[in-house]
Amino acid sequence: MKSTPMKGNTVKKKALLAALTAVAVAGLLAACSTGGGSTTSSGTSPKLSNCSNKYVYPKAPEVSVWGWYPNMKLVVDNFNKLHKDVQICWNNVGQGGDEYTKVQTAITAKKGLPDVVMLEADHLATYEIQGALVDISKLGADKVKSNFSAGAWNDVSGAGGSVYAAPVDGGPLALIYRTDIFKKYGITPPATWDEYAADAAKVKAAGGPLFGDFGANVPALTMALQIQKGANPFTYSSADGKKIKIDLDDKTSQDVLNYWAGLVANKEVGTSDQFTTDYISGVVGGKYATYVSAAWAPGYLTGAGVGKGASSGVWAVAPLPQWDTSNPVQTNWGGSAFAVTNQATDKKLAAEVALGIYADPASLKDGWTNQIIFPLNQSILKSDAFLSNQSAFFSGQTANKDVYVPAENAYKGINYSPLTVYYYAQLQAESTKINQGKETGSQAAAAVQASLVKYAQGQGFTVTK
Image (cartoon, rainbow, N blue to C red; front, side, top):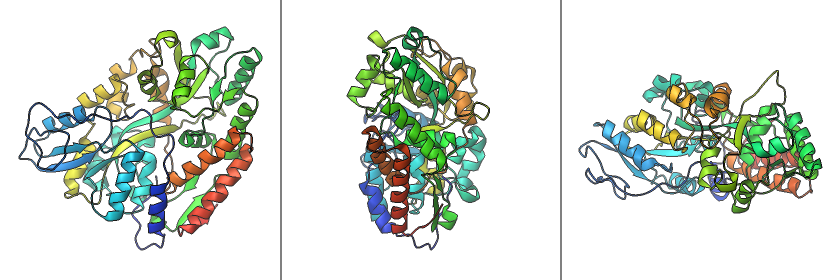
């Protein structure tokens, strides 16, 4: 996201709000699942209503928080024990899309938002353009900037040094693969996408399983892979909020879609929607040799039953294949942060919570050791415990040191736009047509471009390319 609060622009916000509310986001961060709603055994009930925790210091002022991390109860309790000056009143109002619907409703109604809300990085621009988020750069964010990689910070930042959320977790991409399948067919982890395609053809010719999967329902992943090759889907800054550059059918975007369309046409990769029971069953059963995914994937896969029984002891991870090994590019899928809303009663106090929640050592340790998050805080990424951790899922491989931390530190960030939700929906629709053999990658890219340009113009944007 590269944006600052808009003042006096003519974008048709009401129409945009309605559209953004109506269109669901596909491929939400799978690593984050619904948390519990129990209370602590000690402390005093919050003064705010319907909170899922009790206070340690009941006389302190309160800040309301929405968040869906699985270990939110622990994280909130840790924060409240460490802060005598403020206490969190936490609610889980739903994961991802369920929460976003409530967020949008409250923005439209101009009431009902919590002081602090958990958001995925690719959604920040959507809410910031509506003036719903507070710039926290001067409320303490600048003091912790050095705790994060450039890419992690860029994803939550805007023009002019503005900052709209405190990052917590991310999703640097890598190639997860089955060592048993690779050994059987005499292949090693591909360093390039050309090698990936050659390996896919080799395994198919030998009667082996599908080499991977091009799921239409993960458009955020598809976008990330396009960006890796050099695509720049959107150029947007609400410093000039009437304008947006949309470039979704450039050669690099077409190349990536055509690449996967070719693998699909050759029946070398599958076309199943990811995060479904059928897909996971295929992963467990050895239907796929590889899984292109983010650093949170091991936790998700473990929770889904992968790595147990017949699928135990066969997984490893390698760096994401590159288009040009002389110019490697790392990219990201997913990641969440805590933002202060414009409805916060005390914005300075809310910023203290946003910057402090899920930032203490105990909470971060619980997050990464239990595979709930891939942390972005450099205090963890540089720690010996994290770097030398031998992943149980990857049969003792030091995946953090070998793959994920180098990828995160090399990631430069993504310029997200306020059209992300609509864009994902269109990219998913066209990817489905690719998988059905109804379109080439180039045709799909052109269709997405035309659809987004028309939509953006309908919302009052001046579109350039």
